[in-house]
Image 1: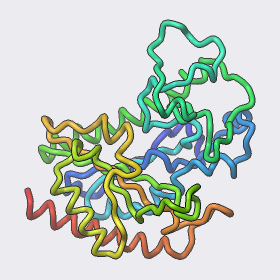
Image 2 (image 1 turned 180 degrees about the horizontal axis):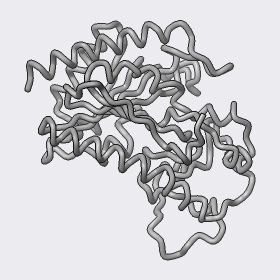
Image 3 (image 1 turned 90 degrees about the vertical axis):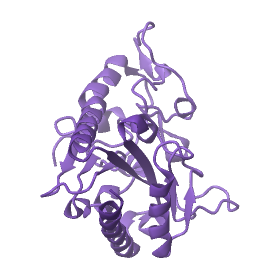
Length: 285
């Protein structure tokens, strides 16, 4: 297993890139470096609660259907690439510069900035302040390389097809983990920033296929799309984004952290979606 600082991401390319699609899994990295494990006050099992557990594995068939899949190797608890680079909580660090552009946001205030302060259940990752050089190191070794790689894939996709659709893949806490019994989450939540990041017919097509496979679908509630979904959508350049959140009850258990038998059915339905996407792009463009 390679150190995440040496290999911040993995790109699985198709033998032939035939669809104007790019799949991204920014939160499923599970390579915890010894350095990080010495910095944190949590054990690996606690840290892994913030992972989008095995999401890149669930989408592993994407290249076989003619599109690339990029996923982070470093864990979300170490560096979150689904945030703006400057969403950093300066109170986490000593010797932070006073003239830099870091800014607060609801995510930073919740402890979930680019360098996260908390994992799930409001559990602090550190019991001490970090040097600000650590934030700079993680940005340079993980954050920027991931985004540079994603930007290159988008540029290649636009050059090849004249358009690009980025599908940003995530998992969300299941109903078994919900804090309120009144909140019943859908099986899958599609986020398009309330219709701003991709054509409505594309979102509806995805929803329709998933609905036909038996899943319940909702749009933008409670997840409308994070930084990647918002930042990379550019209709003027025919670049569109859609976030997919999978309910973890469909495929995994948290204690202990493992896939359950449902993951095979979920992967089968993802393959059906990919097959229909082949037809969609053949008939639409």
